[in-house]
Image 1: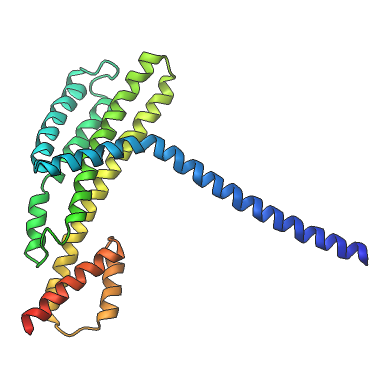
Image 2 (image 1 turned 180 degrees about the vertical axis):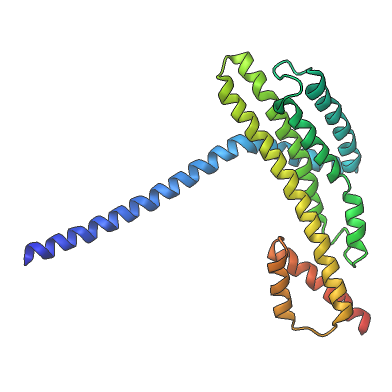
Length: 244
């Protein structure tokens, strides 16, 4: 009987130790993955953040973006169609892919029109200044990620590193740039749709169940809950002020 009890105690203790080890392994793996991502993408993100701050300081964020996009398109076409990149062949995915991301970045420069549409619904640029700053930060970060992608095959040639490894590294940076641009575009579109939906609903139904409506908005739009609530409160306050 004592042997059975002892075996059960050891079994329970063993499961507890395994559980602790598993949690420690998961935490270590998560920390290691975070460190790797920080080393890979941190410099580009920091460069994008600094560029956004500097261009905002001199009030040239949009203009600098225009010049950067024009230069990026020229270089991308030179690489993709003329084969000017010494490590990439013309008319291949490796060289042409930069045209896609640069064109997408150019589409993000329509942000003044997006902001104008948002303003028509009662939100001022000051109300969403943090989001606009993040939008431009994503824009500039994407270009630095594309630069890292373009440099990967050059590094393979210069330092005799495995071309296959650097190809995957370059593709990873390019995909990161693509995701960054798509995410920024989706956020500004969601913000525009949110303000439009709130304004239209307030015009049609002045009296609503506020709590359930806010919850519905937070579920329907891919925006942070705090941002959705802030926009919602701003437009609600404006409505109350007009009626009082």
